[in-house]
Length: 244
Image (cartoon, rainbow, N blue to C red; front, side, top):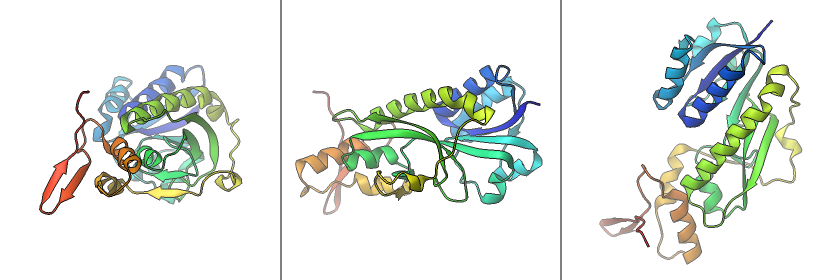
């Protein structure tokens, strides 16, 4: 019997992972029963519709299916335990950051601000916590010197797709061994960050050292998003990059 899968995902990485899963579903004896996405997953939606795969619009709809494996890749909603437990075998998430160090959002920015030299991406079991489940597989890589957040995001996206491709067969066949995050005692203590925290990183204090200012600017300067800034009394000055 084929392994029955529900896929939840968005953004470019969600599209590429779903495409990989569908392209290999026959070889892996897997069947995608339904796909869930959001407004940032237009290409995910188009791909599902092209394959005549039903779309789900709310995590509560997971209760309508009998299936084995739930795969989440950059899905927007935090699933609650009753929805996670609808997966008869396992629910997994591709988290584009190293665990247990960086849970939640804006991991790329905080890694730059903190001056980290290493980053990563993690495939982990989903549980009632947020990014606290057992680790199934991961990839770690050095952070390039003077990297900007957009560059680190793209690099992590590339490693995430590589991880997904390499671990998809053992994931579906059930050959990945979960390891509790508490076993990784050699790593930094966990940090959890909310999406709204990015605004606090954008406010530059001119009294900071040049290095701290540089890290905050690189961590918060990304095309399509409001830039970092300085406040002077009633004035706010945006800090935009110029061509050298």
